[in-house]
Length: 200
Image (tube, rainbow, N blue to C red; front, side, top):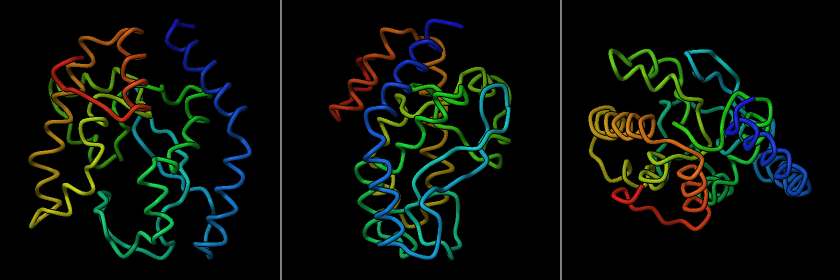
């Protein structure tokens, strides 16, 4: 077990132990405020070395919705309570289980759905050497991604031609630079809400 994996395991175990009442409360509120579906959202994602795993999040959308894999602020498929869950990243809390069992790390690239990961070619596929993370430099830079997309004429094209390539660039830089000190810095920046792309 590497030092990073040990840190992930211990922090995830501690986090789940501390917040389990919050997890239960949020699950109950989802069932009350967004009835008709499960509290948890499960989806197949691409993990380290291209391995497919199941990610766990709190459900923040209506059950009977269609749409793309990208989310835009103000969409009708995201009810008000789901909007709050997403705004404060509460929907990500079940991801601690993914960290605990080793599918994810606290810090790393966000795991893509298979359709997007399949588009990675050449050196860009080096990103798959990393274990996906709950947070990371690309996630922090685009923490307001849904608001940014809401301002675009064609959000999907903007995501595919501007945001997604920039996330790949940032994640490749993280691959070159990552260490435990940087990971702790990024975790702290996630908690405090600040991020300077030029200082990591």
